Image (cartoon, rainbow, N blue to C red; front, side):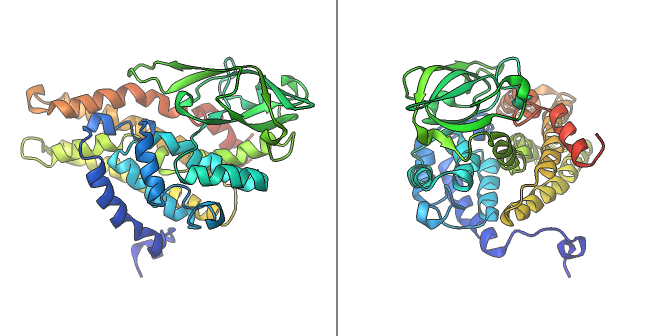
Length: 385
């Protein structure tokens, strides 16, 4: 009996684990020209040609049925891919949302025509999606959205605004949570999800520059945007149930653990050198790994739930809350270690990576749901409120 067996931990099946060798061989060559401070952007990195190359290798939409261009593999196969993409710092931002949640959402709730149109394009790296949930003055209170899609004889007329919309300026489509009936005070009632072609007249996308100098966050404005009747995903008025299920995909993956992993690995490489090793740094490395390991085990266990067709909303929120806390602690702990030394002994490229990750780390506990919102969900799930 192995340690995993004795702890009753979920294993990644051997046929999926076997993907790692091929993926690592590809990534070692594909990203070798990128410095660490660029690779640290990973799922914020934007490279359409790279995404299309992944599509040619069959690594996008790998869980989608073969009838829609996928490989029909389990969520564990995608989990292995995502872990390696993050570990190497591959620029996967173009297809990230489409592969992670837009495609699965369309597969689960979409019409057959929507599946036939969108899913093969996602698998080829030809259809990039962004998320239209958050709005100004709403924060993480998604139920208070004011953007409206009013039914008319041509489909829906869309007006409103979305914000915190990652890579919208480089995406083809948005899946937006909108109000198709009622008022904001009605909360969950009257919410629906629609697919918005971002090239339509009346759509305006404005990138927002963040502290690190990146401009991947965007605000998106809709002014009398005419959508067809086929824009609706699922049932009108069932948007809250659908978006809640969608967020389980967003909150449970390796990206909620490994956003700082390129920095951690680069620091470890330094600590393993004679000039970088100290007993304190060795202890710190062990402390960080000891926090990451159980969280990864929890994340893998959620993939098993998703494989069974379940929607582990509370468990995903727990992984996201705990995981982002560890992610945010990594740059702070590494900074304490590095600046306790003589600065001329620390490689410049390591300091550049530390600077970038330190600047973006505050966003880890905002994107995908703020810490307060997640803890409220967890409390309700445990019957504490």
